[in-house]
Length: 369
Image 1: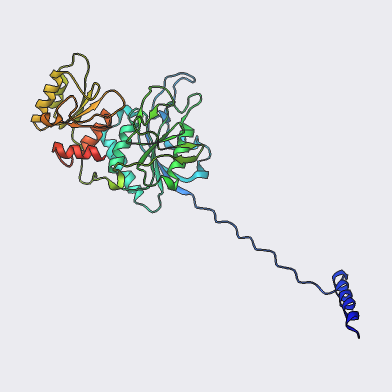
Image 2: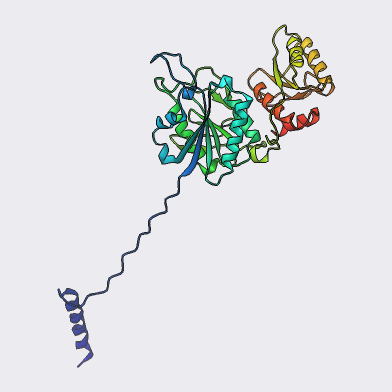
């Protein structure tokens, strides 16, 4: 058969095969197999409750009066929808107090339980509910004595749980989101309120009633959290948690440190009272750059000569107290608090005094923490 007649014949055969209803089946490519994406396991978060306004309840509905620490941690969790989508939650009641009543006993109990939980491979982070009045002090204390890079987040509220438009549930939701966030690891103890993330070292309460009360006045906030979505802006450079030299091991109590407040016409009475009460350290909440009237400075210098460590801070609310500006700290034997406000300086000085009473070494600690 001539070659040109074979081509139409072969083409006809192919067309017949393709169009025949019961003809030869043309092999088809196998459909790709879809492998379901792995669902990440939820973080395991423990909520430790200490009381505070976030657990407060009003005796009269709609009224401004309330009692802190009324509700249990289980009630707080139940009142916060969506937590189970963020983390596997367990909870414990450490205390049920208003934070103006926070004390060393609760601090030790909270810190030791937190360290114990953080050491467990079954815990990924901790949230501590706390009253706002002394939250910054508890947070900084934990920042100095906890020994883990896992997230620890303090949270409170400015309105009680039974209030109109209570802020506690969303604050708690956001705190759990931050504690469950792997990017929160290694940032030290954090404070979450009103959609903001702060370092416990830097933050302070700045308004007695406003929801926007917690501000890191010198260094700024670390980030924001909006309905569980977290963004970070800053990183810390100071020592904390895993790099801290402080520990509660072997400690049953902390040294007494008092704060004395400078004002017009102040004398040395408060200083002498602190010395008589057995203070091992005194923090000056000074005017301006940590200064005070001559009578008070003379009393502080006398205390320093007796071996009581004196640290100058400021009542102003922001700024840095530096050495040897208006006062000759070298000659007087004083240390300075730098950025730390009086209440934070007191926390650090108490921990420092568990290590040393040397003023130069105390100043080194304030430089690093």
